[in-house]
Image (cartoon, rainbow, N blue to C red; front, side, top):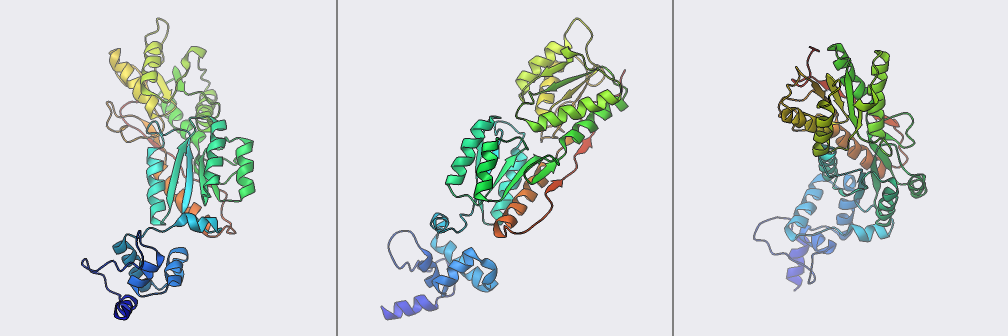
Length: 362
């Protein structure tokens, strides 16, 4: 038995055939990893909680031993003693379509590089429901949280303030935001694509946007479009200012009604995002209208299908991937050092992408 203990203390190699050398039945624990890697339990603990304090060779040896044994770190136990849980929250308005898919992927992938996990929840554009989600995440002792947009209940903001955990808002940036923000200027994004249509000679322009209550992103986009139109002396008739959710089927019906009216029809349509624009393009096909000779269609977002749809969609590329990566990095940095100070708002410019769905006014 003493010989076996001696082997356990001095074992430093890693082979596929090596025995697990567990010191108890059941799932392997921290001491099993320590025995297999030939270090103390305190060193294993430092490797996970303060990795920079452990020599890289020792850290590699510990992590290799943990992988061999199938060791799973008990973060919950640490969080009960005030330590980091290794989990952050991401609260979104929706995960029902592609609007935030790229953001989620970039955010979660970057967190994995920091050895962090994420709890994702959506409130379906209901800010009261968001309050309950935030409360539930705080009960799970998350280390930080990322929200979308600047519209949030005062109750939610107060809960976050009292807990003093790192919080960032994503997707939309504005000096009016109470919380630090990482995103783009949605007002400017819509302004770019609207000015593009005006430069092409369009004056009869319709809008298809969602309701803007509890949705500051849509509100800023619509205000950006209307601002540019007003500056150009262009008035949007009430019947051409159409409300439409981010839903292609609903947008198809709304656009078909708009474009088949017996009265005058628009020469161009600005859509609140690319999903709505897809629906408009489907409607033009149903009505046998040519894009862009009969009507130009533009979106906002530049989703993965926007370059492949027929015709390819003119849109504004929102930097979703960069927002997700930057948010993950800054959130982790703030978790590790809550006293650090940095810029409150980070703005990543949106880019106009001109494709075949927009053309000169005929």
